[in-house]
Image (cartoon, rainbow over all chains, first blue to last red; front, side, top):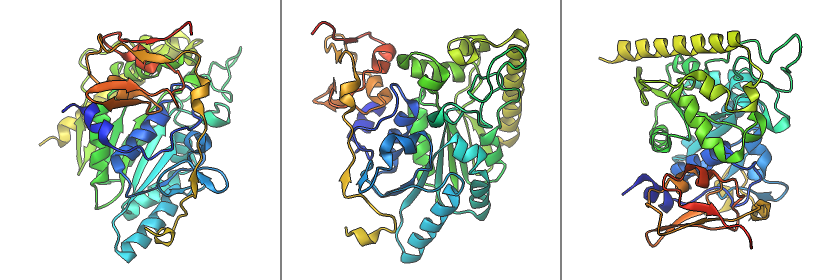
Length: 302
Length: 84
C-alpha cells in the first residue's frame, strides 16, 4: 500500500478551513504532523503564522479537533513540559506537541526549548522554519539566510539584505544530546512522515523535528511552486535532510550531484538582488556545512 | 470523555472559515490520465484531496485554488476547469 493511501485513512485533526495563504507549506506540515500524532495529542501553538490562521480559534471557538493551547512566544517548551508532567502524574500517556515557527524556536523561545531539552522533558517540538516572522510582515529572524530581503533587512544602496548567516538550529539541538532530532522537507513527504512517527515514539526525552518550509507570500513566488522551491532547497544542499538518533548522525537524502545554488536562489524574489560575492559566500557556507555533516555521519556510523 | 479530563480547554465548536470562496478556478482530476501515485494527496495544503474507491478526488469545499497539485502532478492529469 502506498504512503498516500495510508495517510488518506488518518483523520485530519485541524479544522477544515484555516486562513493560511495560498500554497502554504506550514499548513501542509501542520496537518500532516497532527495526522501522524493522532487524536491522543495536546498541541501548543505559539504566536506565529500557524497561530494566526485561526487554528487556535477565537473566543469560544477552536480551529482544532484536539485540545489546543496558545502559549507565549518565549515559553512554549516550558508550558508544554508542565502539561506533560501533569499527565505523567495522573498516569495518562498523551503526546504533547509544540508546533512553533522559527521565531518562537530559534529566537525568542530558544531558552525555554534549551531548558526543556536539558531537563529531558518528554515533549515533541516541531519547528516549521520559514525563515522569518512571516505573519507580522516578513521581519528577519535569526533563521533568515544571508542576503535575504526582509522588511527589516531592506535592499538599498548600502545594504543588500541580511548580512549574517542563518543559525544552524538542528545542529544546536543535536548537540543537546536529545534522543531524537531530525530535519525534514515537505517535498520529501514519505521521509517526513517516517520522522514524525519516530518522534512520536520517543519516550525518554525531547524529540525535535525541524521542517524546512517556504513562504509564497514572503519569499515572493507563485503559490503553485511551493513544493518545487522546497525541493530545490534540498537538491542544492542548502537544506540538508538528516537525523540524529541516540548519538548517531545519518544522512537520509544524499544529494550526490547538487544543483547550483543559483537555481534555488534566483527562483524567487527574496534573493533577486544578491551579488556574486553573496552567492559565493552562500555556496561556500553550504559546502562547509555539508562537509561537516558528512564527517559527523562517518564518525558516528560504527 | 469529559471536558474536565483535559487541563487545557477544548473549544465548544469548530471555527470554520469558508476558504473555498478564495479560488478563481476549481482544479479537477482527469481520472483517465491519473496514475494513482497520490502525490496530490500528500502535497495538498488544505487536505482537499480524498481517496475514495481507489480514486483520488478533489473536494472543492475548502480548496483555495493554490495550484500545487497541478504543478506537482507527474502525469499532468489535473487542470483548472475554466470557462464556467
